[in-house]
Amino acid sequence: MKALMTLFLGGLMLAGGTAVPVLAGDPEAGRKIANMCRTCHGIDGYATIPIAPHIGGEPVEYLESQLMAFKTGQRQHEMMSVVTAGLTAQQISDVAAWYAAHEARATLPEGVLAANAPQACVSCHGADGISLLLDAPNLAGETNIYIDTQLKAYKRGKRQHDIMSDVAAGLSDEEIRAIADWYAAVGLEILPPPE
Ligand code: HEC
Ligand code: HEC
Image (cartoon, rainbow, N blue to C red; front, side, top):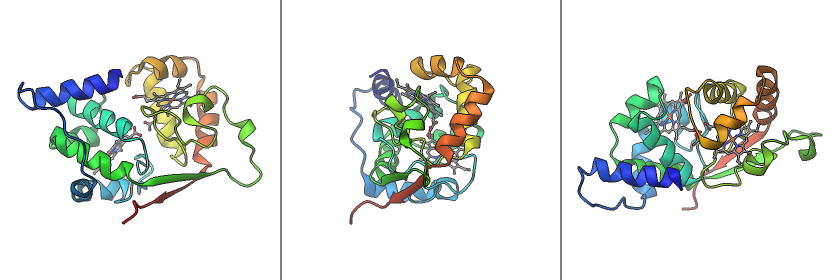
């Protein structure tokens, strides 16, 4: 809810203070914008570099809120801050709609039981790393470098979020590594939207 409010207010500010509602994203328009993202995230949202996350099939709310957070400076990253500075709120909705239109499918490695998943995380991120909430990301198949970096960013206050800052504060670096390894080992397949 807070993320949605931020997004909505962000849209209003970008529109120069005029009361223009943020329009729902158009995946086809977003596909063209995704050409700017493909060198790192792939056209389908399966990342091509270890420091970038897989974003295909993530909840549209989550994708939009993160892109707006990079744009407004609430979340910072040398690459993403530059990328989002050049996008309007409408383009952000469109490209989020394109990536969200994909389907993420996760498979636990052979012989690995869901019951052994990190218990502190499963209620929101699932045992296989497919998010159960609209405002939470999938963790399935993300590299352990990416998961490790984000958890340490929450822990050290570089990235902030009501729930995740508390969750990460309670984890040791060893626990972070073990959890990152669990989700990184999950097989991820990203299927394109139906024609
Ligand atoms: C030069 C490489 C690069 C390009 C181009 C790029 N990204 Fe990223 N993106 C990254 C990296 C690296 C991160 C991880 C940032 C961090 O560590 O906080 C990221 C993070 C993200 C996230 C946050 C996902 C999450 O799970 O929290 C979203 C959403 C995203 N990018 C979308 C896009 C979109 C949409 C585009 C194109 C308009 C794009 N990116 C272009 C490298 C890139
Ligand atoms: C009550 C729900 C909840 C629980 C429990 C939870 N998370 Fe999260 N998690 C979220 C939400 C919501 C976000 C998005 C935060 C944001 O907007 O920055 C998130 C974001 C993350 C991210 C950032 C991923 C990305 O793509 O950038 C990581 C990594 C993460 N969580 C790992 C964990 C781990 C590991 C645990 C267990 C120790 C855990 N979470 C427990 C809700 C939860």
